[in-house]
Length: 213
Image (cartoon, rainbow, N blue to C red; front, side):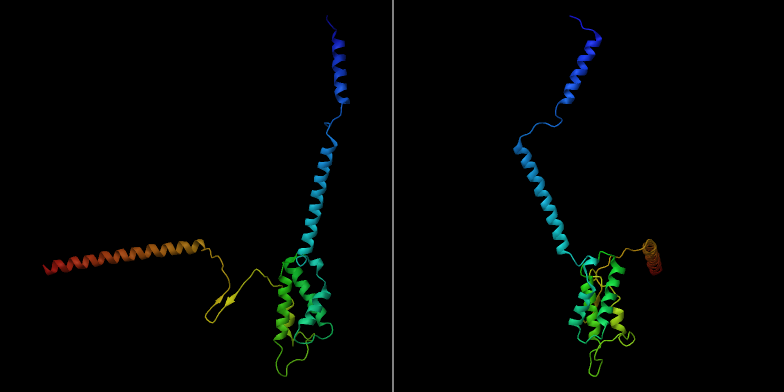
């Protein structure tokens, strides 16, 4: 039995429409859907907990979490000399500006605390018998304190010292190309000089032996 071309095309079209009307996703059981949804919820909760932990455990590296009042309060509490009115706030403001200028919004972890300790130690330099009774805003009289408040300490740098030497940490030294060239030229020159001296010494020995004969 032969069919016409139009009938064949119609059959192909109807088959294609029937395929399009079928569901696009394979049929799965409700248990599988429940397991996949549970996995997604676990991953989402884990991600939220991770981000929350990072925000809690590393607050000092974020400049927007440090309050000027907290720094001023620490300076007031730890200072060996009383701070005059407004000095603690100004010193705290200088420390914050120094951190921002050195590291940007993401401060270097540990730098602020070291900077605060440095200011407190600078205040300790003005403790002596008959010395000042408080730290004032006079930046000429207490120059070390105010200068130190503008410095952000880099905790990655180390220095050690003893009675014999000072160690500023290991620093990789790479010789400059010109230095290497000069060293090689010096070695070659030294070899030539030693060789010429050897030849002249040999000539003198031969001459002496011939004269002796």
